[in-house]
Length: 86
Image (cartoon, rainbow, N blue to C red):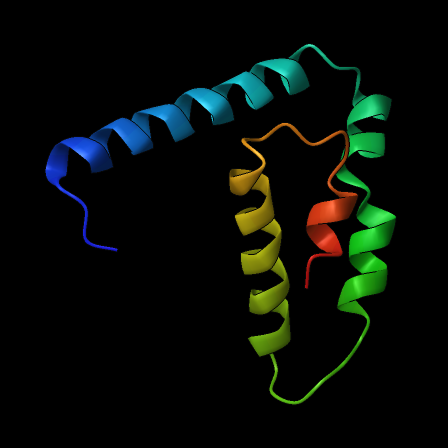
């Protein structure tokens, strides 16, 4: 959407703050708990579905996942709802 420069800057600043809060949370988390957060087994299951053109499906999965992550203000308990958004 067309937004004025000030509003775009404010939204970007807010998004960066939310992303940094998630990064801080993950930095304080043990490696095994990060694995629990990432839910890579779910991501692998989602990506195993082969459809049509190479790469298109995968890009769509990641686009939808990060769209959910941003819309939820990076406040997700795990990445599973993001991976399953597609």
